[in-house]
Length: 78
Image (cartoon, rainbow, N blue to C red):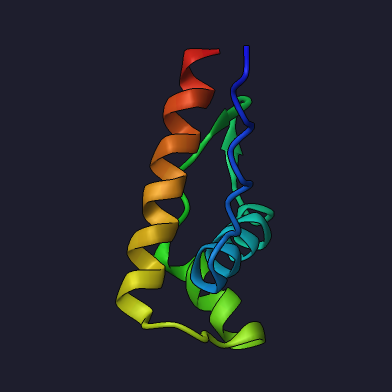
């Protein structure tokens, strides 16, 4: 059709860092009768104790909670 494929987007350091952290923090997720529960501040704090945080804490925490909300919304659709 004569269209060029768009250039792939390079993820930013911040986005990559937050997504990687979310994957690690999600490993501590608890379930009740196969229903996933929300991540807590304690889950995030446990991550901080091991890895620290290379970005502003408020941005990091709010981003993790936003990703968790998306995960839970998608999980509850299934």
